[in-house]
Length: 280
Image 1 (cartoon, rainbow, N blue to C red):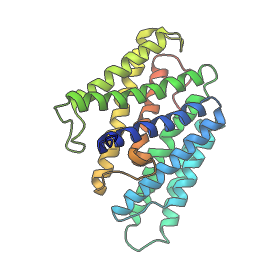
Image 2 (tube, rainbow, N blue to C red):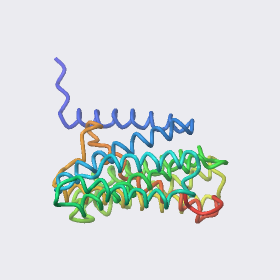
Image 3 (cartoon, one colour):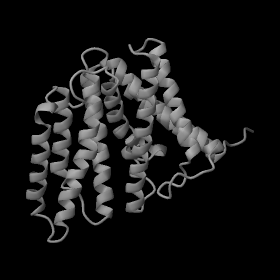
Image 4 (cartoon, one colour):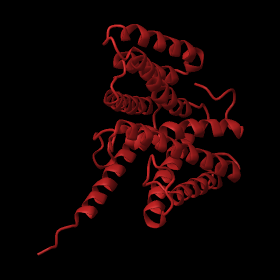
């Protein structure tokens, strides 16, 4: 008789399989700009819904129709390469829409509903739109997007592996399971991966540019993870949702990508690999 697989091993197996499936869909979507934009939009709306649920636990929901419309507009405008022309107008329209629609809610919480709505749109819609802008870079957009996804994935994977194996020093009470050792492991892995992308010719840049981009992306990705942890702790929940099984919700899985994509785009611009300004 075959011994039953221990529960922790089964959980790890499910987590790995789920992660590979999600990664497969994500990397495949990069091959075409429209499929990638649709993937980013689906992720953004999933994250926004979970942020709405976290806000509800704090006493006030987002004005979700306004927030969802604005997040969709950020992604669509980025796909059509128009975001740099209309981002300010979109932010103003979101603010005015949140103020107007909030008037029809409860008598209390008007300020919170309006503020949470604008925060959610900026946090999720505007920041994730940088991934769509990155994919639409005329020369190298696909390679850059693959690089960004790998750097963030390496940060997550190696921070977890190093943290669970040798992590001893907690980073913050907000997320006590995260350690400085794990953070260093994720940073080192992403820095080396960035240099490797450059050395292997996957992107056209000096190796040390790749290392700088990897390091900045990793730091931002880990900051994004901590910010999402703070939001969950404030709402007194362990996971933002259950949409991705053992990985938790959309926010749990993609929190590091929200900040990491912006940092990658900015790092490309800082190192001279993008023209113009770092905007949509």
